[in-house]
Image (cartoon, rainbow, N blue to C red; front, side, top):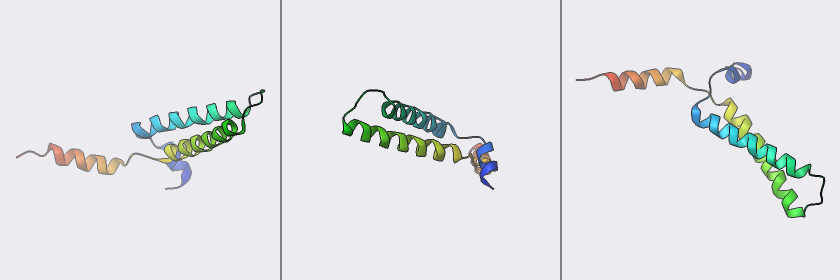
Length: 82
């Protein structure tokens, strides 16, 4: 499976939430960095790390795909009764 196929497949719910958190972190960090007022160095450093962490979390979360084959196996195993 190449990267384009991977990005087109559905993403599990947990990673969708994680992706949205990553987007929010990256956006907040970018807004702080781009603020037109002078900020203390520690605030800018934290905003830079927030931006990087958010970007990485977003990219990794988007690349995770559901493994449909294993889901079907688990569903069939739990449905088999005595």
